[in-house]
Image (cartoon, rainbow, N blue to C red; front, side, top):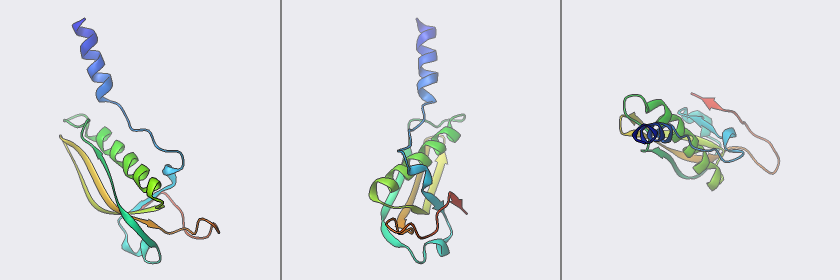
Length: 116
């Protein structure tokens, strides 16, 4: 029984966040020139404090990235300008400003994944 508990903890500790359909198209950048012609929507963030530790930092950062994209999607942003990132043994926190850079009704504008 104790072995089952240990395996359950290991598998639960490696859980990943689920992206909202469409959120994977949200662009994340730290380049201010990308958002110069965009409309500011609001602050967005992604936090994973469940994962972390020495081995779970990558999982925590990946989850925080999914969560910030989900947050941006929910407020109508298509681009995130990173303002703060922190990943350590306590988990991961990614904060940014959400912008709408694509005219969604006309389909015009720039769209991409990462633009560092």
